[in-house]
Structures are given as structure tokens and as C-alpha cells.
Image: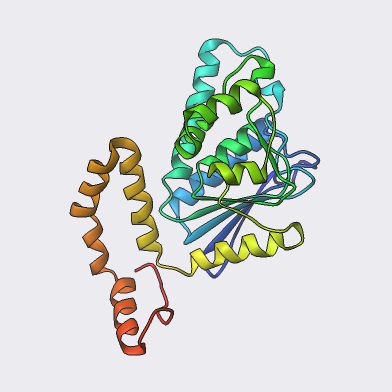
Length: 263
């Protein structure tokens, strides 16, 4: 990669979809450059949220993980600062008020898999494999992957995944409830984009509220989520999106006629 090329490309489209592409051949390793560019990209999305995000990758790997040079010579104090920065990026990504689709077309290891677990939907090609292999350098995952995997698949699965350090294929990840959908390899790019575009065209305020309710559920269980519904979700009735959707539903005799603008 030349000095002027970006390891993380961000393309904002007129539809409101933003496509974030990892493009650091040959393996999309998370070296310091990739880490910094991904952090800046997420900060920019948080400052000006899109309607939906698609995270994808170029090349033969979604990502082969973290460049181990990042860890070389770190003191515990320096590592703590790095973990704080990385988890801050994950927190900002997860809190975006827009649906996020992560598209894994090939091997997806460590940092990239942890990023995917902070997204709303994970789609995979049959060729994709997933792993948290930090044990090979004496670490445990430090970007929130263990706990977010446990949220989706249970703590027993998370232990198995992290402690064995083996790769798991897309089909098994779908059975565990980690991968939402598997698309055929020859249709993967088109179907991943179509899903993200469908979300971008939808009721973005309602999607943001869904994410908020689920975050409250994670933090405080069903009572906290119920409280968010009682005290906050009714605000959707003040949006043009809901008012227009209800009106067109009644006028046209069914769903599918409203256009959503995030207002």
C-alpha cells in the first residue's frame, strides 16, 4: 500500500448508506495505521450518522487479525491505554443510531471479528471462517469480543471459542446465532449491499430506538428495556416517518408505500 492510499475507505452514498471498506492488502491486518483510520472513520460516522452502514473488505481475507508488532514491547500501562482506545471505538460503533451490517466474505479474525460483534447484523459467505486467536500471543480478546460473543451464543460457547483458539465456519456460526445470514459466494457482495440498502431506506428513527432498547436490555435486563419503551419510544409518534407511514398504510391498504426520511 502506498503512502497516499487509505487502509479504510469510507463512501457516503446519496441513499444514506455509508460503506466502510477495509482495504490493506494482502491480509487487512490491523496494524497501527488500520487501527487509527478505523477509529477516525467511526468518529466521523458518530459526528454525522448515516441511515445505515455496511462494513466490508477487499482481498482474500476479511482480516487475518492484528499485526503483532502493535503489541511488541508494550508495558501494562501502555496496553491499558490501547485497550481503552480500542473499546472506545467499539462503543462509538455500537452506539451509532443506525443499523450496521458486517459482511464477512473470508477469514475474519480477532479485531475484525470483534468489530463484527459490535454490529447489528453479521452476514457471511460460505467461505468465511471466524476466530479469536489471541491465546497464541498470551492474550485474551481486548476489543469486547468475548463478552459480545457470549451475548449472542452463550458464555460456554465464548469460552470454547477463545480458549481453544480454533476457527469456526460460517455454518456453525449461524447455528450458534452469531451469523444472521449466509449468502452464496457468487451473490455475496450484491446481497450484502441489498440488505444494507434496504435498512437505509427504512425507518431510521425506529431502528435507532430498537438499538437503544436492546442496549438498555443488555445493561439492565427486561425491566430496563420496558422502561425505555414506556418513557422514550413514544417519541416516535412525533416523527414524520411514523405519521406518513401510518397515513399511507391506511390510504393504500397495507405496508410498503411509505418513504422514510429520518425526520
